Image (cartoon, rainbow, N blue to C red):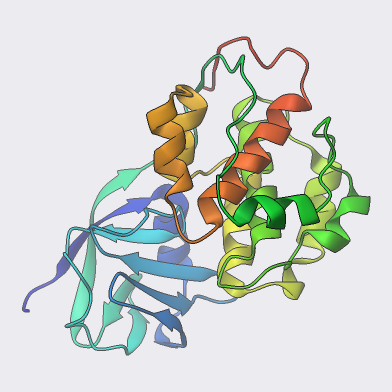
Amino acid sequence: MSGPIPVAAPLRVHDRLRAASDGPRRVVHRSSTALYVDLDGWCLGLVSATATRVPCALWSTLPDLDALDPVAEVHRGALVVGDLAVRITRLVDPRTARVGRHEEPSPRPADATTSELDGLDLPADGGLTPAHLDRLVGRGPGLTPLGDDVLAGWFTARAALGRPDDVLATAVRGRLHTTTLLSATLLDCAIRGEALPQLADWLADPTDSAADALLAVGATSGAGLLAGAGLALASIEDHTTSRRVA
């Protein structure tokens, strides 16, 4: 592989890279589809064309990242992996642009994740409060624990509906140190309304195919996001009204 790696970048990823100081960065996680580094306490990713386009990552068209040297640094506002610079060629806004009509209850995953979600003891009316956070933030295995995914879906949907919850957001931000760096970063994104494409698609048009695509994200992440978004919709009485976010 030679030459710079062209990528699309969410707006805040671009801004954070531009503001970052030069120097090496600790690699938090590496796989064939994603490389995550610690960008001053915020998790910056570089993902392949087959990976989920998370809102804290640079989105490449590479089929996989196996050939990349797992050594990263920031140089003059750009990520450098090994000896290859990552060049931002397009900016994207990962916020959900529209919420369609959601008149039916959110679908439930038909696997073991159902019992894990039940174990979180989520309120049927969707009204999450700081009192629920002890059994959500950082609860569950993996880079993005299931409890965090539920919260991310909740915050994303509430932001998309124009109904953020500043009290709960402040309480969550005070607990981000209790979960993984990637999960904490994605919660920060969700509070700002920045969504995975699969979640944005389901919020805009809740078809069975959109739900299936969301449930297919990660081992349990999609199920958690869907459950959380469903709770957010349930917490707002007039959620069936179609809305467009400016």
